[in-house]
Length: 233
Image (cartoon, rainbow, N blue to C red; front, top):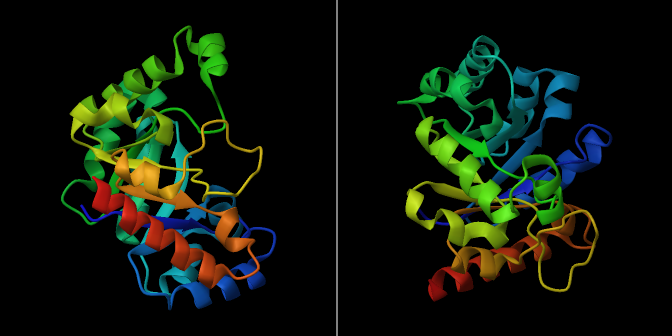
């Protein structure tokens, strides 16, 4: 698939007006990208209304709901999001054998289900503490669960892409940080070009674009870096 970028609209819940204003400007930039909506906003304004507010920009939507629930609950939520025609949604691989029946709801529709392995906020010590295995082994373990559950793709740190190369799934890398951007939110960071070159299909970038002095220019630079990464594959 052609590499795609999702811009995380994390400010929607607390600063909806300004976030929507920026998203509208960004939507006119040429390139293969969409918008990611967090669970807090979906809960605050209602799933249908939230999706409709973003759908007007004419870009793909990733509903970042991070589900880890019983099969019945997940089925109902997936069914609603399929009806709203979101392009992507995600579930925790930790749900394990509860996943296949829920994931099946989206099969044959435009909605792809991605399984979440380890958040980029965590590192090897976290995985050793909670899973008694390395970050590398934990990502592989959870990615395989998602594969067996017939998920369409996997969400993983960009530093771990090599671990899933043989699984033939969509690879989404969150928490991507452009070269020179520094913060302390994500333990496992990677820039756009290296992520794409390493095998990522979808990237998620939020703050570096949305909080920049010129979001349009910052988005354009990220899209350019993605193209360069694609050429190096």
